[in-house]
Image (cartoon, rainbow, N blue to C red; front, side):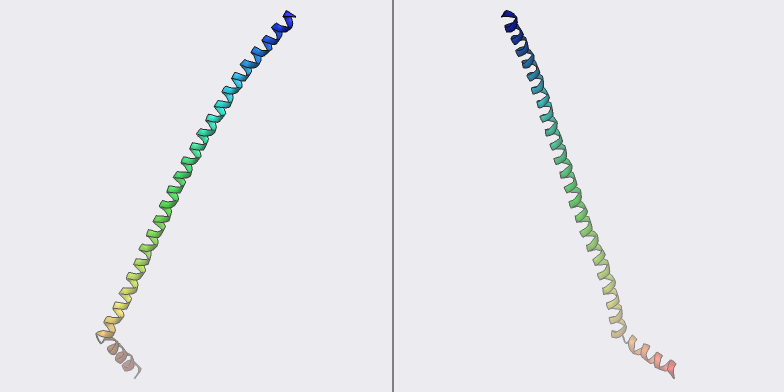
Length: 101
């Protein structure tokens, strides 16, 4: 009977050591999951910041491009107004009629 009791105590001790080792492994896995979650969240935050920067730069580029087009448009309009307003158009028309004669 003593042998059976001693064997049970040995097996219980083995189970307690195994359980303790298993708890340590579970804790390691949980810590790894937390580190992974923090890494993913950090990367997500970085990607979000980069995406916002890219969107902002695209809008700034578009605004600069539109302002350049507007400058060209205004220059053409002012050139046409200058020619028409200064009597240049009348001279051009006269020269064209003169060449046809």
